[in-house]
Amino acid sequence: MDASRRQQYLDAMGITHYVVREAAVDEHPQTVVEPRETAAPIPVAKSPKPAAGVSAQQSAWEVLKARVASCTACELRASRTQTVFGIGNEAAQLMIVGEAPGAEEDRQGEPFVGRAGQLLNAMLHAIGLARDTVYIANILKCRPPGNRNPTAEEAAKCQPFLIQQLSLIKPKVMLAVGGVAAHNLLETDEAVGRLRNRIHYYGEDRTPLLVTYHPAYLLRRPEEKAKVWQDLQKLYGMLHGD
Ligand code: URA
Image 1: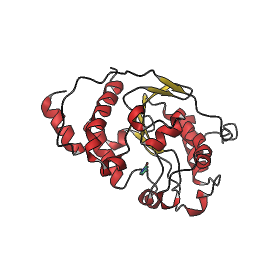
Image 2 (image 1 turned 135 degrees about the vertical axis):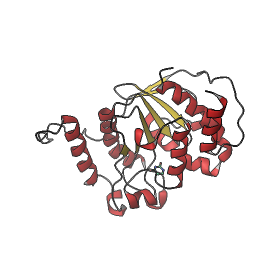
Image 3 (image 1 turned 180 degrees about the vertical axis):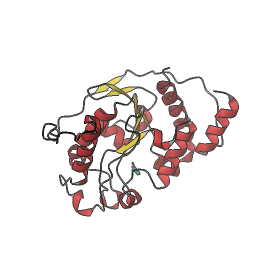
């Protein structure tokens, strides 16, 4: 990447000091995680036959969206304003997974629309990706009251929805932002600092998955942006076939 382009990207992320290092090397073994069998799989057979002119793929999305919108599987049904399904390109190369909707997302029905979302958009911009070219979803589709962390039970009940989204999108790479997303997807409690900078694999298709810090964490700890920039460069390389 040439220097002026790099500077443009760093500006987009708000990084003021950056030291060029050697390309990051995977020093850690790769991990493969199969999603737990938790809640019952979503029954595909009961889906209505696609109407004429509607592809099976479109129909599967519609069925899934309707199931999420009417979900009453956990207590969060009572406190949510609405469900937050996910947004973006349904054929995206990159699927980003966050934690759960916050207050603004609960109000607007779209993930990552608050301050953390603006920084996420800048992070994407930093590697030349517009928000609408990727797919963005969360571990939970409903806001936990007071922005508390999702419980294990809530995450387990919601997981089949994320797995279905993944199987429809079939992205080339997944990016887990923050500990909650990484821990739930990878079934570990290792710190993000140890999970980043290595390639994990998720699900039946063994989709390559990277972990980086959550943009909300970066808003509190901007000095960590340089590490995220390294992660984004690795992501860029994976998306472009390195
Ligand atoms: N944080 C998340 O993890 N997801 C959102 O949608 C918003 C903030």
